[in-house]
Amino acid sequence: MGSLTSDQLDGNSGLVINPLDPEEFRRQAHMVIDFIADYYKNVDKYPVRSQVEPGYLRKRLPECAPYNPESMETILQDVQEHIVPGVTHWQSPNYFAYFPSSGSIAGFLGEMLSSGFNVVGFNWISSPAATELENIVMDWLGQMLKLPKSFLFSGNGGGVIQGTTCEAILCTLTAARDRVLNKIGRENISKLVVYGSDQTHCALQKAAQIVGIDLKNFRAIKTTKSSSYGLSPDSLLTQINLDVEAGLVPLFLCATIGTTAITAVDPLKPLCDVAKQFGIWVHVDAAYAGSACICPEFQHFIDGVEGADSFSLNAHKWFFTTLDCCCLWVKDPSALVSSLSTNPEYLKNKATESKQVVDYKDWQITLSRRFRSLKLWLVIRNYGVANLRHFLRSHVNMAKLFERLVASDKRFEIVFPRQFSVVCFRVSPSAVMDKLKPKYENCHSQQLFTEEEAINEFNRELLESINASGKAYMTHAVCGGIYAMRFAVGATLTEERHVMVAWTMVQEQLEAFLTTNTPFN
Image 1: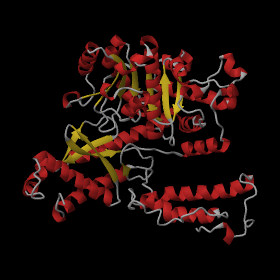
Image 2: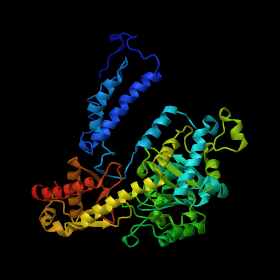
Image 3: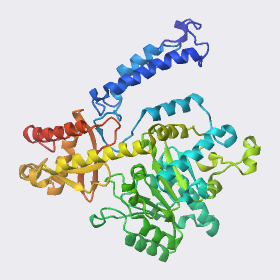
Image 4: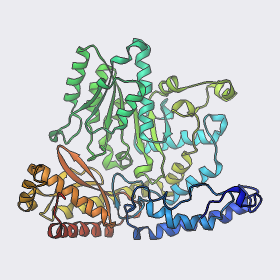
């Protein structure tokens, strides 16, 4: 790997004549596939969380781009030597952080097909198959979830594949805003109010900022342990009534199935009943947990979805479809189109004017869009509903196993109820407080910790020691003032043995931590 200026090289040496030569593509693609297959075969041997320091890569790569071409062999060698050390290995069987980004052969090959065709499917005429396959596959997945027919193309609703939940919420909030402002006047935008809970994903606040909602009118309603940190319908109603009395206009509610921190579930039906009284648009964010709802035993979590206006899940989280693939369904596609459509002369065509086709450019923020439905289509077809359910259930069962292991060790405790495949746990205060007391009372001489702060800090440092080992990777949540470690099962390669090894390692780290380390350093 090198970088030389043009006056040091022959400008005609080694030039690639055809960047898309079929036989050269075949040769190099085989090399890349072999590289990736070997990576998956050995991914468990790498530290799960990258161990590099900020700025590491700039020290390794040249300051300027190469003037002459370099071989794929050389580039792949540099990927192995310089890029892989800086990768946090989301596909590792020992990855238990955040939410999963579960891959699959079908998802990967679907991505290859999409990249191979490289179509820009902004409207139907730009690539009819891209639009029509997306129509079909979104109806398929909606049926698997048992969404009401009103969300499907077959019932005058419809689905679209966005990049992420952030985009899905932004699009639906934009549609909701315009629907209301068209009635009350655009000069009244400062009166619009957006509702979520203190557990709602930060994407809602970002979307509210982008569409012009006054920051003072963003409501993150407090949740409590008594409702398992789901949004209380009574609390929502109380807040709405206060806003109406103040002359404000309730606009949008984001209800969550499987919150980011602890996978809490908002009660859809009573929330929708409250929202209906005020004409509020209800969006259901099921980014993580929505995938599980293809299993009959989890479908009760979305009871009441018929009262919502839109629903989204991320197939790239827990549905074995590579990033990015956020599936959004709406009851009233015309609301999206009304807010997001443009019709410049250079895009006019007979198909669009016939009103018989979907132009997905009018369902999203951007104009250009990828052929994402191919990978979702391959995943559903190549595995089938039965196998997809089996994969999801196996992850839930592994989470249950970890939950039992935690419960069997009195030094640990389950902090929040497990709903799906995420276990929130911590070292119990009773197990270590006697040892911590002298340390937190004298910590830094100036700073005194309460007992709750001390146990939170202890668990934080324990988690960091676990992650620094490279043997597993978990992240944390803070809810109700309690710091918890999150063990999120969902990586495609994870098996029960990896869960057992991870638990043993957690125990060993605790023992070593208590013996050799002084917390709060």
